[in-house]
Every structure is written in structure tokens, then in C-alpha cells.
Image 1 (tube, rainbow, N blue to C red):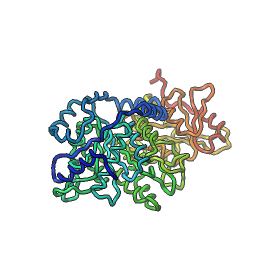
Image 2: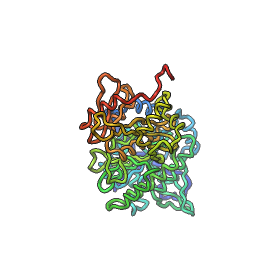
Image 3: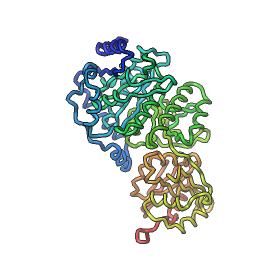
Image 4: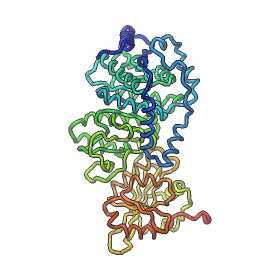
Length: 518
């Protein structure tokens, strides 16, 4: 591969100074006017509109990404020679002048992507940046790649971002340092400098060891970088970790997996991935890397593994912060989060560090006081406690509890109003503590519901802002005549037993006190 002249000059400079402590950086090549900007912005708008976020999801996104846009830098098109000549204090000065904290996204890009794939993802990366994410890209070279090939792949990524209308800068020296005991440390200043210039840093997994520049694994590069970011007070900890490869997300025996709660499902997923052939080792490596990275980040952070063609899905996940499709039950799988209609390749997988999940078949093993506090905080109403717990004693099937009373799903067995059918599984309460929102509790609970209950029905107020979330996860819905309730259901029995569902939903008593009584 023949590199453009500025890239070749930068590489030659780096070869003469492998042992130097001065960070080696190289900006993208000079760009021609971006005639496709209008088209790119139009595509971004279409991708955002296609996410169809609920009001709650939109508010959550705006709350997380409420920073004031940076003013354009006069010297945005800075090149290698300018950065080398700049005082080392420049990074701190630029950071001090910034009016916002960055919402960092750690991005791992497979260097074996084709030019078409790389171009597609570069366009997505630029769109994510416009939406408020600050990407830090680490390339994953082929296992047999030498230093020269790693640097060539590095500039392929830089040039792809440049071609998509973004600004990127290659960092191939001065960031990582390997210790004798095998640990990798991060010099964060070069990354901060690039970010302060409103450009995307693209890192090569190369580190200094005993005055030599050597290759390190992309896993070590990501893990050490995530730890450095988590401990840096000038930037917010990463909100997203994105792995981009040919195949997309995890698959088990040819079926794609949409969501993984690592705290509760790691062992099962690892066993399932190990028990298959074809790409299993790479999936296992990604699983281990994501688990380690998320373990050092805040619980609100999440990871997504996707293919380059998943542009709309990645944007949807950034805005809604949820898995990219509703889930369905598959009793033969290790979990219940297979996509309904996704039988092909390239389906993304969302992962969270998550919470431990417990199932309580009776009230006896629950702390009812804490459960009541959770319900009242979630619904912002006072529970009519005596009547509610008395009813639960008679009809409760079980409570799915997430974490330390971070969320709960209460399911009852309601008698068939016609007196002829089996009891109806009814989701009486679905609650997430306000203090636990944004860490995937709702998705964790819902996944367990799909795993345990083949058919389920529930009702919600017609004005409930959460209904968009319910619409996405139900197989059917019906507004009850003369009532302000909407009936939802999933499973094959929904249409067959619709009349029973309707009558049952009408008869369920209110659980909370009216405002006059509370």
C-alpha cells in the first residue's frame, strides 16, 4: 500500500525516534472542500428520526449530552510539524479553555475491514461525533502484522474518517508504555491534545518497552485506556465502548444475541460460545475484553459489538441507550435475548456490566418494606399496602428482583374470567428505581420475563410515557373501551384469549391510593 506523502514523512520521522519520549502524532492529510456535507447531515437526520425515541428516552439523551458546542478552532487543520513545535503545556491550556466535558466513546476497529466497510463506519463515526460522542479509536491489527503494517492500517482509518467529512489524527508513539511485568500504562496527554483540537484520535497498539517500540494487544490497549479515562477527572468516563468487525455481534449456533447482562449471564454465554465452531475464539476474546473494560467503568456505561453496516443501529443505541430490538423467548438458548426477526448476520449485541437477578416465588423471602419503597418511588404514588399485599398472597406467581432492589417485576396468575382456561400470567408491576435508571435495569428485567413466561399480558395508562417502550416489546395491544387503560400482551395465546385478557384487565383493582387519600 502506497501512503500519501505526509503519512510517509511522519512514519520516517517516527523510525528515527523510536526511543524518544516526545509523542509522535500525525494529522490527517489536507482535505478538499466537503461537497457532501449537506448529504451527510441529511443522512444523520434520517438516522436520528429512524430511532423513534420515546419522550423519556429523548429527555434522557438530552440530559446526558447537554454540553455547549465548542467554538471552531482557528487552527483546526493542524499538522505534525505544528504539534511537534508546540509547547508541551499546550494540551493543558486547550483543555482549560474548553467549556465542556467530553462524553467519550472507546472504539475498536478491526483493521481487516475492507475499504468499503471502513468508509461506511467512518461515516457513522462522524455522525456519532456530531451527536455529542467523543470517539477515541484503537485499531485491532491482524495477529501477524508488524509495526509498519500496523501504522499503514492506522492511516487507512485516519484517511477514511477524513474522507467521511471528519477530522482525525494518528497517534502511533508516546501513548502506551509497557513495563517489565507486562503491564501497560497510558500517557494521556497526546490524546487530550487531539481531543482539545476537536479531532478524533486514532491509536495504534504500539508501546515503548526498553527504548523500543513494540506491538501490544488491542485488548491491553483498550483496558489500559479505559482505566486511564476512568481515573481522569477532566473528562467524563466513557459512556460507550464500540467494537466494529465483519461479523457483527455475538451468535450462538447461528442465532444472534441482542443483549447480555454480564453480571448474571457471563458464565452461560462463555460456555455457549465455547460450545461451537467458526469464529468462536474471536467472540470469546471480545467477550473477555468487554467484560474487563466495563468492570473499570461506571455502571451506566455500556458496550456494543456491531458490523460496519450498523450505522442506524449504533445511532439508535446512542440516543435510546437500549438494545436494538425487542426480544423473544427461545427455550433452547442459554438466554432469552434473541432478536425476533434477525436470522441473518451483522446483528449488533449490547452488553452491560449489569446486575445480579433473583427470582422469589413468594413474599416470604422478600423485604416488603424495601419493595414498597421501590414501587412508590417508581410510580411516584403511595401504595395501598394492606390491600395490595393481601391480593399478592392469593395470586402472586413470583417476583423478579434486579440488584439490591434496583428494579422488580411482579407477575401474578389471574383466574380466567370465563372459568374454563388456564390462569393468565399478568405483569402486575414493573418498576425501576429512579436512582437506578440508565444502567439497563429495565432490559435486564424484561429479558428475565421473556425467559420465564411464554405468554404474558399487562396494562398501562394510555398517557403513560413508558408506553413507547411497551409497544416495542409487545406482540399486540388494545385500548380498552371506556377505560384509560391500554392492554398489552406477547406470546401465541394473546389473540386466542383476547376476550379473557380484556375482561381480566378490567377487573384488576387499583394498587395505589388516589391523590385525595395519599
